[in-house]
Image (cartoon, rainbow, N blue to C red; front, side, top):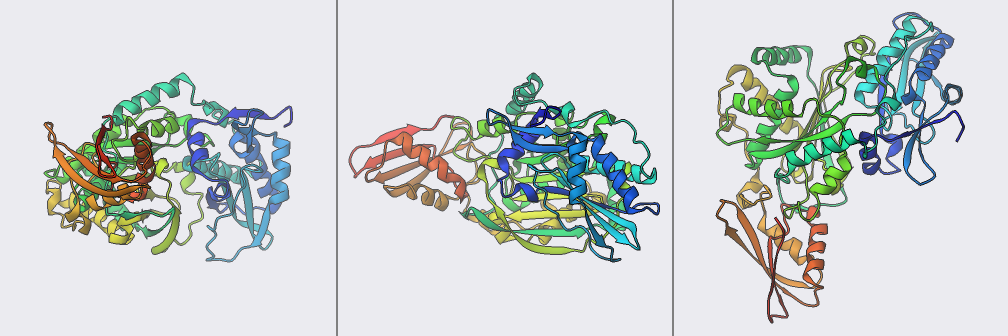
Length: 533
């Protein structure tokens, strides 16, 4: 490490990603931008503009490393070192009109934070593609890069304006008092949140099939939706959260559920010029009801989003560990019902993008199932650059029940009805429920709809358990507890059995660890234990 390097703490957003992403995945975690210079510009002038861009932003001069104690850090190298690296790695390719330039270029964050490709047409730069490591740059940071580079290209390499917010501005570790205070707030919000949403039963593999539906909105549809949002005085994010919340209600019958959304952590105008990775997931609870109208579901969604607004960075690792701790789990891993990410547009970046084709697609992909990461099986991203686009990803049992395009259509059905009949009950939207609902047991204190057969399979997966009989017990508060009577051979003590079941539970969709275990070893005697509330 050189003396002029600046070693930064990873902020809470980066720390969460560092734990979620494997070493093999890191180079593929990139943000890609493609823009076309407004003016005729040479390769030398474009290279100079890129050099000034990289010199101006710590986030584009960063490397992932570990300090002497093995703690991950963000190392900001000197401008000279960063420019030497980027100049050695710049690719030049011939520009072909109509070519889709949006293919991903991997970036190894231990070696670089940006890769550049210049597309040339008759010795002039027709397009520039930058791949930015997601370790150091989030989606709003990508837009800040786009706006700044476009300005530099228009200035043909003249001096860039000063940049105030830097990666170091946000380098607060998880022990920072502000982070600790925010973490305590989210614990209070989620203390009694529904643990997960059951879309179907089945055992889940470590790598599973998923579907992605990509649908360009089209300018007419986009304008119509914006007009609806303005007339009803709701934000686009609120309307989309309400749409997916309603779809989840009607599919699963679980009207109170937790959802995930990404918050940019950018409160001041200057924050929107920052090239940094500071966006974080927030988890909120919609207290829905089967009698809700479309308007009421929108109001409920807006209330929880408003309550989350203005919250600062928190320790997501600590929050999820707490939610999945034995005393908080209620027998189920924490997995939100759905996710909505509405990516706002920085207007300065909009005109700079090179618009490319974004065809409608329905594609099958494989995804790694990581139970501890708090990732939903249903996730929607709404973005407007380079053009209005919906991306819906579905995995797990829900993927087997309904394809991604159909689920996206359900969400659009909600928004179309909201425009014309905002006081329509959600039950009249005509969205058919999932086939798995008939076998589910509702009312458990975890908020999870239980498939008894999957609970039996979970319990019987423990070595030495030879039989399992389940009995739901109705409690005075209206909830249910699930009691299990087991016969066993050579099972370890009950504490270890519970630990085994807790580790296995996320891999059995629709299951929980029973609240009460009555164990009869070899048919003789009985022991009883009840998991903490």
